[in-house]
Image (cartoon, rainbow, N blue to C red; front, top):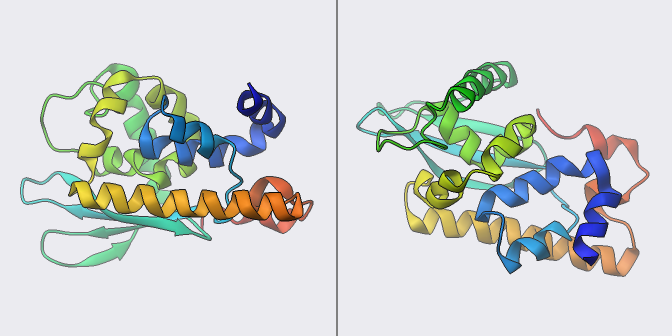
Amino acid sequence: MRHIKKIGEYGIAGSIGIAALLVLSGCNSQENKEQLDANSIKQGAFVIIEEQADGGYKILEEHPSDTTRVLLKSKDGTERMLSNEEIQTILKEEEKKIDNGTSQLTNPTGAGLSIGEAILASAAGAIIGSWIGSKLFNNQNFQTQQRTTYKTPQAYERSKNSFNKTSTSANRASTNTGRSGFFGGGNDRNQGAIGG
């Protein structure tokens, strides 16, 4: 109950950080309860998404970051950073697929993920596309197959561990100072660091 009370106190300002933590390991584990109580020191995620031989996309790596960025690695080896405008357009298209029941994230058919589905399955998607979050986090299919959106099980574990370390550090800082990170400061410049 203590965790639920804290979530209520954080309100809307905390929903983005909470969404990023939830997307990494589902919604029903004890680990998530600990993550929900954490104040995020890093406010974004750096995600590398790789195009696969079949034309689908997988999450190659992701790490906590001061801003949220998505790097796309194409099959031909080229790399480019997606702009925020591109990401928003892609996510709006994916939201339509979720609503229509045609998204691989909520209604898997075994086909490869689109770039938008890969972004939504990552921490970046939870931050940038937070308005879509409840459509995914409450979906059992999404929770079941989320690990498969990463290129390897090791990539999933590294990602989860890197965000857990950030959460643990935030808990320590919160315990020592009483205020920390995105939720704790009265410093308005912290609020604008997401998205860049």
